[in-house]
Image (cartoon, one colour):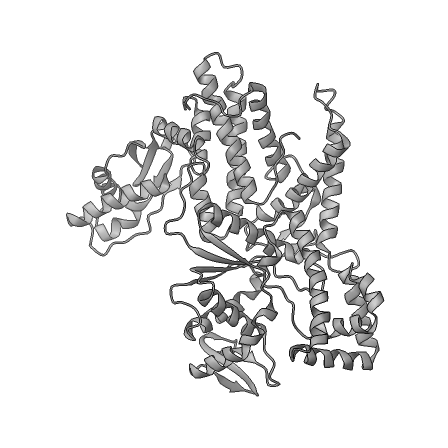
Length: 585
């Protein structure tokens, strides 16, 4: 609806430009917002206030001219001028009801798909295979997954790329330990943290072991068959650990999506050679660098992008440039989204600029760093174990599921008193798993991705406020109404007579524009806020508009359809966030 209103305003602006009221070079970003007070309409625009100066008119006078130039639209019942010159648009509720009926009949819920369709690379998760996944990997994994799901729902072709850390000097140490103690290593690989600590202990304690580790790094990089076998064995075990976590988190990542650092090894020398051929390389203290005048240090000197160390080794920047070239030339991506820690913002700004100057990516390709903040403990510092160690992601999920199980078990005790059938132990365990995982994910996704946040089990498992348990329960309320009515596909037509019906219907109609914003900005918290609002509006509708006891059969069917559409939208929205839903809870 906002897009339709923007088009109406643009049409009016074109008329005013044509008659000389506005200068020809006026091209404002037309803002259309939801009104807070419905007595002022459903949507409002301040375009008259923005353009009053170039029009050499008072804002209200310009608003009157815009109002006169607006074309008629069946979706808008009336437009009024408010205050100093705001344009307030009132929806035609009969037209809105017809749109909702169309959405009810559409598997896509009335959400338009992208035209043209884009091919989008989503770079997400990217754990270091030398260690087990920890809580620091959660944000990249689930934020990237949610945005990828939304892009696919909107019709884009999404190519997930799990750029795992599967190369580097630490692998020499790990391979040396596998070689030295194959039997012990086999058992310890079940817990990568134990394995890594054992290997690190040997590296620190034994100069001979350390020397062998360095030899194996060189041999691995030279393609030695023995080293490659050990390396492939280790990576296979590590990736299997990652896959178990992805499956548990309901994240759409598979082994086929893995394209690690090692995949670009053969192209790194060519990347450096091509940078040199483009006249971009400078030698500094033996290292080969690209200096960019736009990026300076505190002393005002240009910062370097180092692509080859003095000793001949390559860096993350070299691999990233090779990956950008691959994603542009081989994958032919229109857009590449990098879900990586916000602290890497400068690295990506500089790498993107080098890739463009070197011609590694198509000029039209969008390169976007979707940075995110850190997950902190209650003390506001990065989340750690009590002894200061890194929290393994699997341990966090175990605790979340157990806490959720205990919570639903306590609530289950009162079901018989309320005349409801208690859940079996298997059902309680299933509900605990769904609620536990959903709570961890939603607590993260509901925050703006660039913000740091404090991890708190009590808050995320609450059935009140903007939490997963609240939304999962809201969905089960809708499902319960439809079960009692005996209608999963209510017939009839939607009517929007009561204010609560109009508010709920208006918010349902905004699902598409919310998803478009998520896809554009890479911000799943917008979808979380929308679903929370929708659940609250349904609660108000449920309390004020009798559904099953409505005396008018047509009204009863209308409200059942409105409830069913709300349930479908809640379920679809939660699925796009990567959350499973429950029919009973």
